[in-house]
Image (cartoon, rainbow, N blue to C red):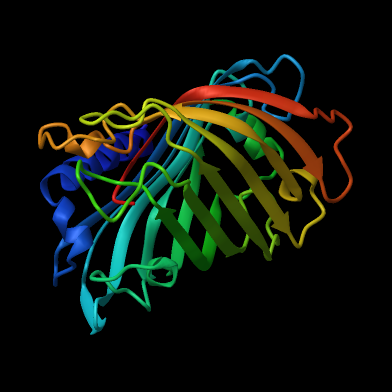
Length: 300
C-alpha cells in the first residue's frame, strides 16, 4: 500500500512539475526540477500471451529529479526517484507490478539550442525494488527476486513533430517519426537472481499527417510501427519483434492555448500487429494482436 501511494504521489508531482516547470527541461539550471513521465493504457486482444487475454493493461514509467551538479555545457548529474509498473485485468503478477527506487542519469552530449539524437542520449543507473498489485504470493512462491540493479543507455527522439501553430521548422506535408531505444544491463530482471544479462529494446513509429487545416492540427496520423526486443537470455519474450500498422489522433497537438498546451502529446491510437520470434517460440505462440488506447508523456 505504501508503494502504491508513492506511485500516485510521484505521478502527481511529475504532472505538476511538468506544468509549472516545463521550461526547465529545455533550459537546465542548477537545482532545477525535471520530469519524465510516460503512461499508456490500452485494450490488448492477446498480448502475445494466450488466446482470450482480451483485457486492459495500464503501464507507466515516471521519473522526477533535479539538475544537481553541472558537469560541462548543458550536461548535469541528474538524480531522481522513479516508479515503473503495470496494472491490468489479468490476474497474473507479471501484469500487475510496481518497481520503485532511485536513479541517476547524465546526458553527456546535451545541447538545448540545436538538439539532435545524440544530444538526447542518456546514461543511467537505477536501484529498484518490486511489489505486486495482484498475485504477489505466486511471485514469492516462484522465488522471484524483489531487488534489481539496472544501468545502461536510453534514447527518446522525435522528428518533424510540431508543438505550436506556425512552427516553420516542421512540415505537415512530410513524414513524422519517433524512436525509443533502451540498452540495459540487469542483475535480476525481477525474474531470476543471477539474470546478469542485457536487454535491448527499440520501438519505432513512422507515419503521415492527414487532414490538417489552416488553424487545426492533423486529424489522423497513420503509421508503421515495430517493437524489437533482444537479450543474452534465451527466453522467447525477450527475443521477439512485433510489427504492424496503426493510426492515432492527437487532439491537442496543434494548439497555442497555455491552459492545455501540456496535453499536446496526448495520443489516442489503434494498432494491428504481427509477431516474430528470434529464438524458440512459446508453446502458446500467438501471431497477431490488436490494441487500442491512450498514450501520454510529459518531459520527452
